[in-house]
Amino acid sequence: MPHRLLARRLSALRPPRRDEREWRARVEAAREALAESGLPAEVGQRLDDALVGCEARGEITSELAVAVEEVAGLVGAELPRLRPANLRRSLVHVGVGCALVAFIRLADERTALWTASCVLASVWAMELARRTGGGLGRRIDRALTPTAHPFERRAITSGTWYATSFALLAWTLPPALVAASIAVLAFGDPAASVVGRRWGRVRLGGRRTLEGSLALVLVGGGAAYAALALFGTDGLPLAAAAAAAGALAEHLSRGRLDDNLTIPLVAGLAMHLVQLSAS
Image (cartoon, helix red, strand yellow):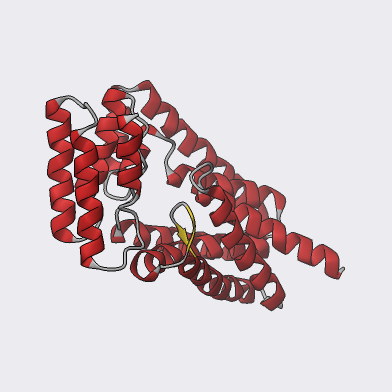
């Protein structure tokens, strides 16, 4: 029970927050819950120090996210997965998406399919190496640290789901729809994160906000339209369907499924259905 109270107080640190006074009150509530949680002294102190730093900076810090994951792993407590802002991760997210769209446009279909299959095999081989431990697994984890969320140390990484969605799309949809689906994820997802953290006020459940979802629709829709234009496809209805479906997929995932998998797959399905209805 004390762990559940701590989990609720830590979850309250997630954006949106309205003012500095409210933020400090939420941090203090988390520290009070921590004092009553019965965690081992050393572990509790580590988390408390991270909360103090979090209060001073006025945002969720990577130190707090790492401390929460360490506590959850050590004592088996169900604690929330905190996601601090990570500009490097967002830039990689966009960069990979741009590279994939360019590759899909330039490569022939056979090359695209075999490349997608090789990428899929590679990322899941890396996941296996991480699970079996040893020097290779530790090296992979260290390489992923700058762009991975702390909770991904104990979970399948978002990059693996990103590559999985690309491979599934490549084997099931035309290249134009694959590129548009990836574009919704690459641009819309980071936009939703940035807008939700900074300006999100209307909660939709979990970490999702109305403002973030609207950002995903607008930015992701624009990116999908641009990707479709590269293939000479009349893209407005398709882009609108992809963006709306991607936002819905992100909202419904809520931590149960990784949205790097669900957003592009659902966006691609929506565009496919629009094409079928028009034919």
